[in-house]
Length: 112
Image (spheres, rainbow, N blue to C red):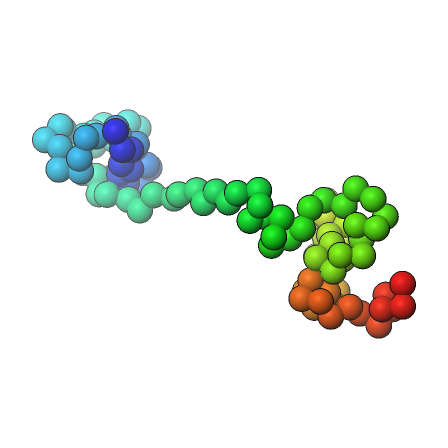
């Protein structure tokens, strides 16, 4: 059975309901305030990708030093460290990483 979400017009909270169809005759009430003044809400959804799709888009996590020669890997460690430290990565660094993933290596690493 699908899950439908309704937003309460009174308290503005979401209520999730298992229903056979959206036109079910079942009376629906807000689970927070009990109001019947509900409107259908647009629900979020998940998009799952296969492991092979992720590998194709980003490459695998590097395991050996040679793995870092793959242009898709350049910047992965730096991005993770910036994210973990809560610091915004400089725009110039982002551009260099994106270019490297497309196969255009930055000057400092072309000779490696």
